[in-house]
Amino acid sequence: MVVTVVVRVFVIQTFWIPSESMENTLLVNDRVLVNKLVYDFRSPRRGEVVVFEAPASWRSDPNESDFIKRVIGVGGDHIVCCDEQQRLVINGRPLDEPYVYRDENGVQDPASLNEFDIVVPEGRLWVMGDHRSRSGDSRQQYLQTQDVVASTIAEEDVIGRAFAIIWPLDRVTWLSIPDTFDDIPDPGESG
Picture 1 (cartoon, rainbow, N blue to C red):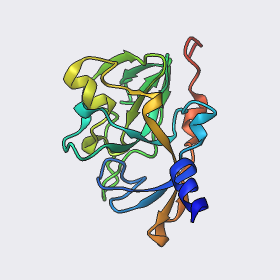
Picture 2: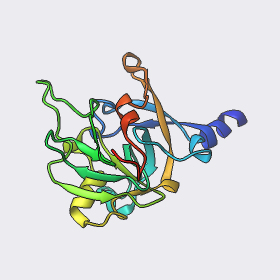
Picture 3: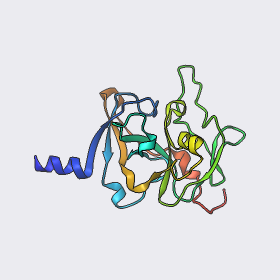
């Protein structure tokens, strides 16, 4: 019993998905495993799905504290929406996003309906839901406040990395980083 408590508190925790903000990657009522230890050894990386304690200003319900989103940008990243093909551009390189929500007719959500041009502050993360039209995320916060600090998440507020869907059984899978992030240069490198 002690081992179970230690593992749950410090290493791995299960989280339930309450909203549509990460469809079709994560569906309402999915259960995910979150590695709570990984960021004690390194910072979150672009493309990872993370659980974090949301700032109070992000919450429509004060009882909602843990959010789950995809890391799009890390400290120093220059993110622009959008290029001529309606893709996000990170550090000068367009980002193809095959994980973004598609409806039953195959129509994909746009990267954003509104333009923005930001640099992610050091020690902070720009996070977005995969179902852009249903996600309260960095993009939505920035469009409301025009404050890049209030629109990003502090790395220390990240609880952990979601690495697997474990329920329902027909959806069990690993949550890997999409290959499309491999082509994004680090801040300061030419795109």
